[in-house]
Image 1 (cartoon, helix red, strand yellow):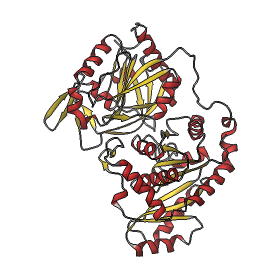
Image 2 (cartoon, rainbow, N blue to C red):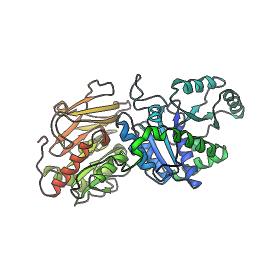
Image 3 (cartoon, rainbow, N blue to C red):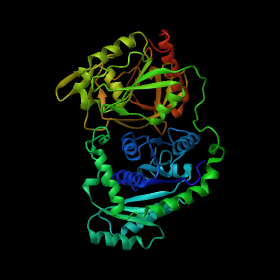
Image 4 (spheres, rainbow, N blue to C red):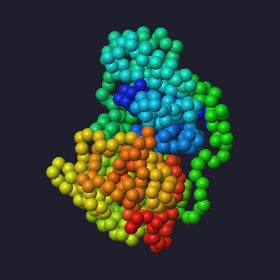
Amino acid sequence: MLKGLSAFIVAGTRSGCGKTSLALAIMAFLRKNGARVAPFKTGPDFIDPGFHSLACGRASHNLDSWMMPEERVREVFLQNAMGCDVAVIEGAMGLFDGASGTSELGSAAHMAKILGVPVVLVVDASSLGRSINALVKGYVEYDREIDFVGVIVNKAGSEKHKHIIRQALSELDLPFLAVIGRNPEIAVPSRHLGLVTAMEQQGVMGLIERLSNLVEAEDFRLRALVREASMCFGKKRGTIYGSVLEGDNSGIAGEDRGSVKIAVAMDRAFCFYYERNFDILKCLGAELCFFSPVEGEPMPRDAGGLYLGGGYPELYARELAANKTLVEQIREGVGIGLPVFAECGGFMFLGKGLELEGERFRWCGLYDSWFKIDRRLQALGYRQVRLKRPCLLGTKGISLRGHEFRYSSPDSPDDASGMFFEIRDAEMKLVPAPCFVYKNVFASYIHIHFDSNEEAAANFVERCRRYNRGDSKTEGHN
């Protein structure tokens, strides 16, 4: 079923080395030259997959060994690589960076071992000469279970610097793909929260075209890379995947109870979603109806529920405040039991509003909190959520996994969050987490990955069906 597929991870020595630009360059070049490319991203990032999707013409999926069981990681990879020629997986942070300093969970290195795919290592050459040899050698020898099929050196300062780098790396028995000079025209713009999203950036297709041209101009030797990666992946594929190579790889099972429409806010303000969460909801019978709060669009009136993801609502505070129709729909709907699943930016939107540069923008006002944006990071890391009470996402005692990354905070944190959740970080230490749980509403800063516990998605969809039937009763808090 995957005969001939080539697959590899583009991983960096650290964050900021240019792996996103170079992964996009490889994806775009391969597609331009006729290959069917399946894009993936390790870790919990939302922004890079948006660029992947534009470069490859198909949705990019997150693969995360902390939030997802290993078998589900393989299933998601196979399901979305099916029918493609090349699978390109962009790593997160440095190759060995993951959930903690003592575990490989969540790292690109762990993903390489789970999937049996080799690594292309991206190295930042800034301020390095022959020392780059020692750096690369250290990465290659740190974990012998990982196969490397090439090195790309980025941010060389001059032609002389490139020459020194080539000389140094010639001492290693490792395919050398390219040395790239510093070039601001191929960098993806960033802000304090990360990269500017694909939805926001003007001329994003022009950037992808420039990245594709870079591969040809610098002679990346991609054909040799694809062949070598195919052989490397092929050697381990049968052993690693076993019976997963046959049959249905969706990983989703459930009774067919008919479809139900779920409204999904999708625009420049709300665009942080795991593509896999959409897949799971659809497999469970949800018909996803996308709409844009920023453009003043109301929620589809026949929707049985609402999914409000994260993003950058602070950049569109005025436009969101002006969408009075949506605000009233949410207020009225929640009052009669509308199921609402809100994460991070969506959680903020359900509050009173945002204080920004001395001005207040009023939003839904479902609970008594104004939000502020701080220059300093307020929370970052993996989260495990154990439910203490039944609610929109499941029964008492179930555990869910996700990720939290925010610069905002409410002025009156809900101390009652401990009544509903027990939240721990990747090292299982208790952490606080503002939330709002009311009737059929589950809202918090945490981006839940449904592959961590499918019951959460199934419960959400079933609550939406019951709402459509006119049954607004809830097991949750009232």
